[in-house]
Image: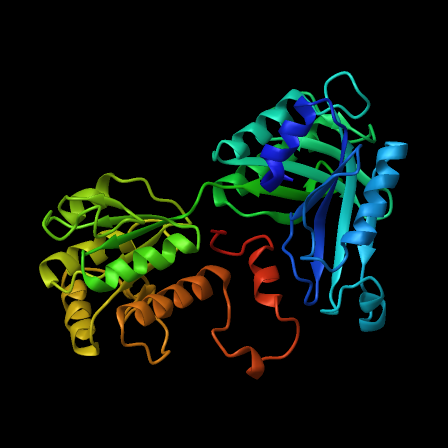
Length: 381
């Protein structure tokens, strides 16, 4: 829903009612992630895609029904390979989709002010989140925003205490930057909630204005990262050389101490100089970031590790350092090395095996689904 915020708000402002279909469960090798949405307005126009083309026809029919009745539905597409192919879900997985109507103020199923505010936040690139309370058999119960505004009840038995607990969990999901589904319990009651989150781009901070940094910053920007390149030497760290990044001419440890980081931030140290590397690694390992990597040969790595131990860095912190940086892909050029680094970043953030898919069994997207469950680390880009 939130990834369609701009189009949804525009349609609502034009007086259109919409049926919004949202993926609330993913099983097997289904092609899209939890929270992906597609909408159909009351003139039959389609916004977004829920499966990359696999089940759009069936979802369109469900949206049309919901626009006619105003009653929410939960639909499942795919179960066996034969059933999946019948609706076009040729990957053989299963999608569970919640479909509900949203409408302008004064109409049936009007969007509450607090939910509209979250849509506006998402449209404007700010962190945003809504919670969809679900029952697999009866459909959605309620659409909630993180603030305690007016709810949009579809069934009225969800207690205020449970709503408050859901809002607390939603705020935590917004902070983590990842959509998840979990059961929320409070005072003996339990609801199944899907937390739909839209987060600003994750940060990737590169220290050292070297050729590898140019390639890494360009590649990371393509993946949606907000990239910063920091180097104390203004002759090397220039906007012309790093067009895809914010460029900072500052002593690296000073910048890292003052800049904002979170659980999704990636720190890549490519400076190749111990006077920068060692204090930078020490500072980075003390931060709540997703990934810290440092470039260098194995001999350089061993020398840095020895110096870090001399500075009192404990073994658990050192074990979280990715050095030498990147996966073993046989990379040599700056561009290939950027792929190697970002492949490792992606694997670490998603808890993936880093093995070739042809050497694994089970659902292709199992690692992604695991990362979307409660307690999984990292966040989406």
